Image: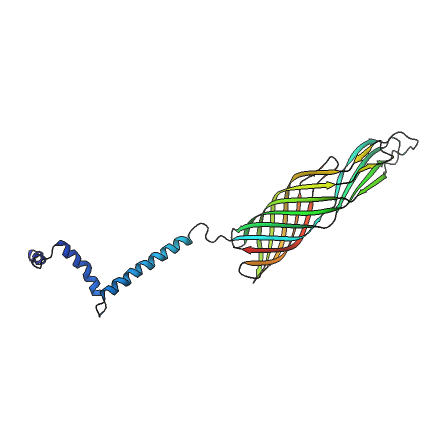
Length: 291
């Protein structure tokens, strides 16, 4: 019987390729609609194949490394307050001999104090979201403050009583401080209420500071010479900061709000008599644009 079955394709004039073709076409014909539109069926199968391929391509794109990373641009501008600086006293030796038992050969030194006018500060930062609550940014800024007063006191310690007395004073009010900070800042979203969010930030970096003072010379009857008060110096210091912001999302990619931060630095030495740490408080507006 098997032999008879094997002979019937040859009787019909079909070779092995014809049998194979029949096996492929038969299921298609069976699935064809009643009107016999086999070509339409093949076209729909081709379209289905293309659609599946397109879907695979889109999924592949979504799995690229940069998918889901949000780039944010922060712009801050506001006022900058610099704390007063009390600079370490410097010894000038002893006063010359005199008939005054309290001040004759008494040790003498100078004490310098700096206070600043309210200034301005701006900064620009670019960052990426590490998670829905954490964002890491790189920030560069600029701050400018004028000197309110540079006061130099000539002090002596009395021989008998040990009391510190002021022998002479000199005041300068012509000078400026400029700062260029570069920071890495990490922000944490503390709370969110609909479009309103509260964030805390902390960072570390470096800052370049320029101090320029035009003060002339400090002379006194108690000094054998004079003290040059003209300073034009620059120094680099390590900087640390912390801040809080209150942001309101006004569109899908733009937020506007309030920002306040505190920053301190290590000691900056501008001259032998002027070496101090700089402490800033910046209060202003903040604009965030998401891409």
